[in-house]
Each structure stands twice: as structure tokens, then as C-alpha cells.
Image (cartoon, rainbow, N blue to C red; front, side, top):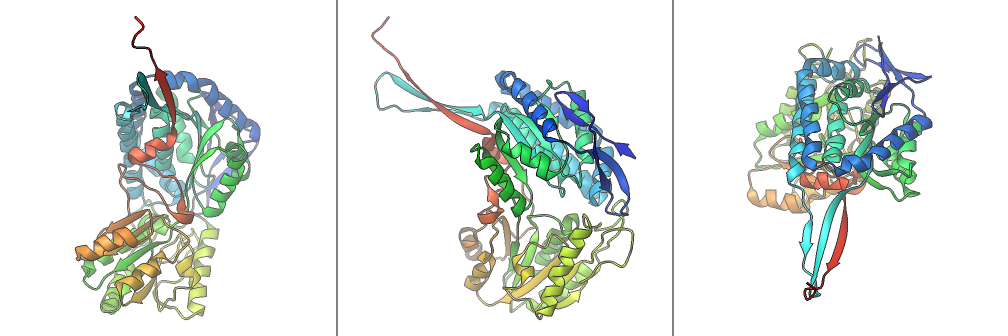
Length: 478
């Protein structure tokens, strides 16, 4: 049984109260973490503020060196970190290792922007004047993490903040905090200046709200649910603090009549069951052309039937959902759809075992657009399927949603593909492939899926603010 400590101003800090962390594979307690207080948040933010000026004055290339050192520490500890993630989150071990290695690569990638992000020189309307536009750090960043990709999201928030001269306070999810504490141990070994990185755990209503409402925080980067994102915005509003939010998703997958059916089945299946169906950008609903619907449904049903579900430390395709509430939410959506006329072709219920939060890979057909299972985020291995006759109809159905994170379409027609690029109203569209973004892209949602975004050049710029300087000089003066 592990007992973790917060990391504030370069020191590991105890707390009076703790929160237990549960292994979703067997429901057993695996650790106790600190239940942080408002005072802990204030101490972390104050430490980050004190050191930010000196950190920001370091050449970016020197800040980047710390990211490279952290990346190497991560690579030296892949097995330990992956095991930690799998144990607390239920992600299959192979995917956990991918997450850890991708996190190290992301640290290195963002470090490489040290010599690349730029200001501008703007033409003036006046003689003897230069206009300079500087890109400067915002100050103290707050990173509030989700539980589904907990380790990678540390890097997604910390790496661009560091290389651009910001300091940071991280709050991990109380469902999956252990990996963040192990990360803090590695950071402590690289000699990072005290206060540049801080880790405070605890309840969202206390730690998350305190971070979002702290007047010394310059940007809040949050990944999580829409209701939680709204609360973050409300708390940040009184200080007019910048927010960058990645919230829910309800990704549509359109399968045209000319699609490579086998490719579509494989990609959509993979997108649906990755991380046990708990990914905000994975395919959540399918619209298949009526001319190929029977074949597609038969093939994807068969593909889902052979998905293996069990202990994520073993050779299986899927592990458990995160907790009991997740099971109940998935079952609620399935039951309400069936009551309204939907039909289950495979799955549709909890796995019959008592040792964890497992749910069967499931397919539902005869689904209607107004059903909750089409409109609400499922966040489990359940895929509802509808049919359509025209591209216009498919695009209209895909866009009929309050979310706007990712989407996909399967077609061999370039005209259809280009129409989809322009007319599907989502921040990302994947064509003939599974839903998974690249670190050099830009992961950003429309509508209720968020504000701002992450990754690549544009994600880096989330952590920068601009300053314009007008410099007028006298050319005649010697």
C-alpha cells in the first residue's frame, strides 16, 4: 500500500487527510493520496509565482533542456509508470506503455520549439518607428487533469508551459493520481528550480476550484467533462483568467456506400474500444449508408464479439471501466435505447464478474437520432448505429450534436472527402482512419467540446501572450 505526498516548492508535503485510490480491476484500495486544502493550493501558486520571473528569463533552450531530462527519466521508468497507470485506471498494459512513451516523445517535441516560436516586426505608418510584437509567458499555469489519459495529459499541459517560460501547478484526478506522484519523484531528480513544478491533489470542488479562482493564476488548462468545465469558467470569470478547455465529445463516424468496409470496421472498432471505450475523441456513433448497412453491421458485430475483456495486466483487448458510476451510466443509456426500440446485436450488459467494473463490447441498431445514446457521451464500449441514404442527410445527422471535438468519414471519393472537411462541424475530421491525433496537429473542439486547444504550434501559443512595443527614434540625432 502506497502513501503519496504532494510536491510544493520543490518539497514533498504531507497532509492531514487522505483519499483512497481504487483499482477498477478488482475494487481494492491501492494507495492513499493527500486531500489537499485551499492553503495547499495557495502555497503552490505562491511558489510558482515567486520563481516564474527568473524561470521566464532563462533562455528557452535552457528551459527545454529540463524537458529533455524529464523525457529521459520517463523512458528509464516505462515499466513502472505503465504498471502504475494500468493498476489505477484499468488501461491495458500495452496501451499504458504507449501512453508513457508518447509522453516522453511529447516532452521532447515541445522542447524542440525553444528555438522556433517567434515574435514579429510589424510595418509602421510612421517614419523612424519600429513596431515589435513579443511573445511572452503568461505566468502561472494551472493544469487540471482527467483520469482517462492521466500521464500524457501532464505533458500536454506542462511541456508547452515550461518551454514558453510559465511555471505550473498540476492537479491530478483523484481517480488516477498515482502516476502523477511518481512523475513528481522523477522531476525532483532532474534539479528543476524549486516552484517551477508543483503537484496538489484533492477534491475538484476544493483544489480545482481554488486553482481556477486564484488571482495569481494566469491560465487554466482543463480536460474533463462539460459540467466541470463550466464550473472552471465560472470560477475563472471573476479574475478574467484565460481558460483552455477540452471537454466532452460525441464523435460521428460516417461510412459511405463506396467505403472500404473492412477498413472502416477495423478502424471504428479500434476507435471504440481503445482505453475500454473511455476516450473523448473516439467514435461514439456510426452513420452507415443503407446500401451497405447489413454487411457493415454484421462485420462490426462479429468484430466486437471477439474482443476479449479482463484483467488489463493480462493479454486482453479491454479492461474495466473506471468505476461503478461509469457502469451505471452506460447501462442507463443502453436500457433507455432498447426501451425506445433499439436492438442489441452483441453485448448490452455488464460482464458477469464481481472483481471489477467490466462492461461488454456492445452494438445497438435500429437507433433513432433523438435517443440519449446518440446525443449523450457514452464513455464506454458501446456503439449505436444508424443508416442514411444521402451525404446531405449524413452530414446533418453528424452535426446534430452539442459537441464538436472529433469526427470521421470513410469513402474512396475525393469529392465526398473534401465536402466532409468543409461541412462536418467538428474540430477534427479523420478520413479512412481511426480517431487519434498527432502531437504536431491541433486538438481543439467546437461548441461545447471546449475553448482553445492543444498540441503543435497553436497549442504552444495557448501559453503565450503578446506585447506590442512602439519604438520611435530620431535618425537625425547623432
